[in-house]
Length: 133
Image (cartoon, rainbow, N blue to C red; front, side, top):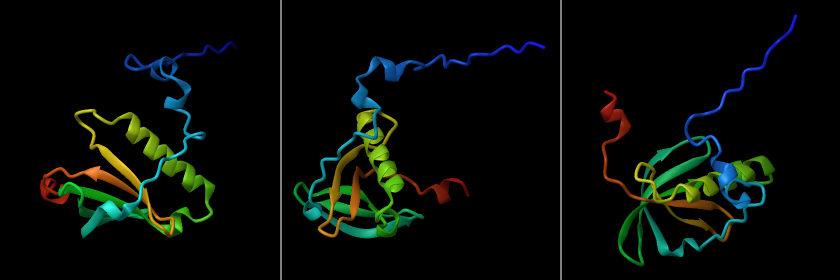
């Protein structure tokens, strides 16, 4: 009995990574350029999850509202898989910066204690729980 192989190729963006330089999708060699969190002030917590807490905040240099995703220390200490996932998330967000339907990553910071945070643009909107009710 013979078996045939069916090749499934996306009609959209099937070869996007082949058309870009290796640095576009090579998350293993990604080296983050961390900033100091001193320019940002947390205002209030608006959400939390297994791996992070999310706050509204202010960029004190330009008095701009922001959202800060603070990654939990327990998730990043000495776990190379978690560190790789964090780097992957940052790299993907940097690659997608400027797309009209994706919130912009403005900065990445690391505190003196080594806690990473992702700084996003603030978008005024309804909470999901209000929309889905």
